[in-house]
Figure (cartoon, rainbow, N blue to C red):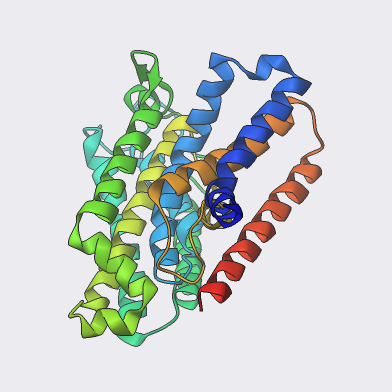
Length: 330
């Protein structure tokens, strides 16, 4: 019986921590329990959830994708530069005709896809560890972003004056539900279906659990790795565009450290750093936990440096538990 209780607690510890954190903050300030706060937390979590879902794919095969944050930043700058109001005086492209909203978003998604394919090609073709391959891509994306951002006449000025239809995507809603939340929910459902109901997703779990066994079983490991990074890159681009729409602008510094937050959310949400273990709901709860920490502790006026200490302690604890599980299993 005790073993069952321990197993149950270890599996659902993250949910208890999230609930306990909400209760503590609510006791400190009861106004935290309100529709407005709940809405704000969901909106702030939405783009982070999309990024974390992309980052989880590399973790699933025992790697880490460090390019996420910089691809988010590149996508934010690219989408914002193509979707400025025609009457805005400081347009990035002064003579660019007004494009249908979907066109710049598709261009942005394709750029993310191409960077993801670059990651996947380097990892699958040359057997470079994902950590190193994506580190290189992170630097390339940051350099490309800054070169693009500094083009005249913009000359590294924050990109603003975005079109109303683009801003509506980030700040508007349907029946009171923000569009960014709806998009995040749709992407979450799609990713859950991919990971749980398709041979591609099941093969990724097999590769992460035991790559040699997956190869013997006939799984095309290189092809799966290529496409998992392609999917991740596309998700980062979507998140970057939504961040620009949500905040009303973009700079080349957008996305800084987002990759670490995404990886941390996945690990805290139960994704094993050893590969082969993880669930989509775990990603959601991991992101929500860190959003509640950031938003909730700021809400009650806690020193932001204490927030970092709490986040760091949670991350280290989660990884320690994961490693212990892995060693026990071996």
